[in-house]
Image 1 (spheres, rainbow, N blue to C red):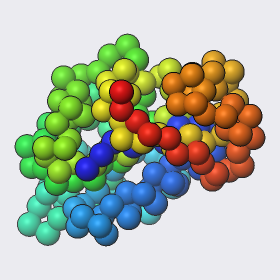
Image 2 (cartoon, rainbow, N blue to C red; image 1 turned 120 degrees about the vertical axis):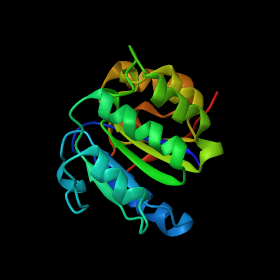
Image 3 (cartoon, rainbow, N blue to C red; image 1 turned 90 degrees about the horizontal axis):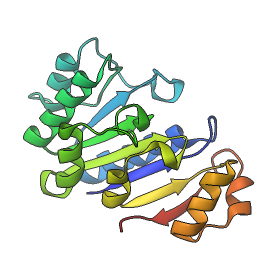
Length: 186
């Protein structure tokens, strides 16, 4: 079980790679995927999207569990899905554009508890974001691995260099889909 973040500029391939990684996790652990598709992006269109969070949950944790996606309308819906994930367990979560829900300014209690207890509840979390500064320190405290895609922000490149020893120029010049994988945790 783990928490992985895929960070990079728009169009760098982070959602495509996160989807690939969660697909492998499904094969490895046999647990379904709960995809929180924050923006309704093309790389996730192939997964059946449901109209309500409740219908999505019934498909993920029902009698015949299956992968399901949902485009949330608000934080309360995301909180409900995270609370269920801790209660019903054994799920792979893809949280696309996670900064909407796990920002540097606020993390809800339900999401925080899920991040802090993922190892005890059989939960993998795969999140995408455009910038390291957008995310709560909670993410970095619980992180298993960081996938760094192309980034051009001097501030973010400096942070990746300082905290992970990343080569600024290498990350700045990555092509679409290329990635540097770094360890997480503190």
